[in-house]
Image (tube, rainbow, N blue to C red; front, side, top):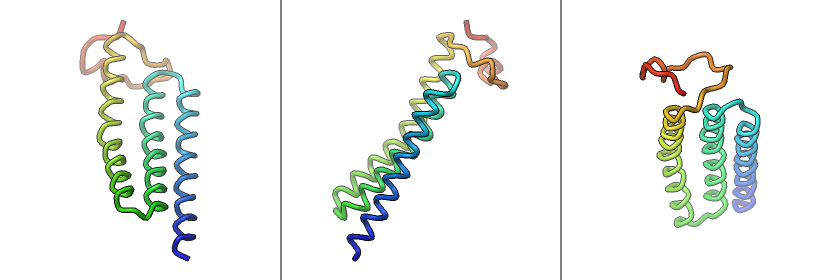
Length: 116
């Protein structure tokens, strides 16, 4: 009984993670510039991957696998926002312009320079 319940719960987490992964993919394909694409990939991607890790942890019923899933989630939560920020900042200073749809450009206010 409990094994069947964990399989259903794990299935829900896996499907929800796959849906968030699909949303991240659609965001990468449809959004207008690098900065909004990176936002979609970093936010929806980490949620999707986190949900998949939770689904794996629920179905495994093994302490070692659960620990690896928790460590994987922590690693993603700590590294994904930092790497996305650094990549966006480097792209801005190299000269990649935000889309014309961008209303606020706080980097221009902070640096005093417009990208090339």
